[in-house]
Image (tube, rainbow, N blue to C red; front, top):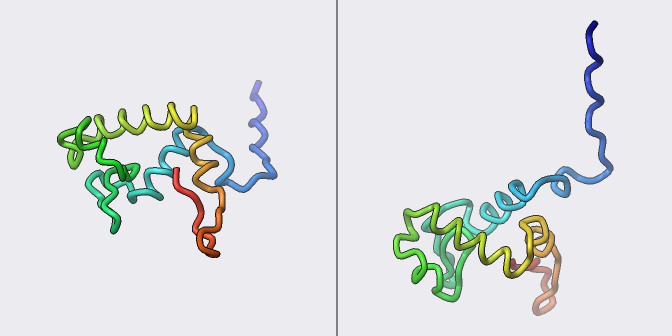
Length: 107
């Protein structure tokens, strides 16, 4: 006897709001650094999650090439500050005005 195919997932939420912590982590790494390990922005923030306090370099001396160390660093940061990647993404997506301009939010 053939089993019926499962019903497709139907959701009223936009795709960007549906997901897992892994998807939220990918979102943050992409938005912060285009998922580039050695990315440095115009303010001097660097790495996958854009460290602006120069802590990443002290904890990951080879941060430019060491994905595992950076990933562990950002995991600890996320856990302390947000508790989950999904919560971090929600914070990142919050819109806040700065000097009258909608610039979003940093995680």
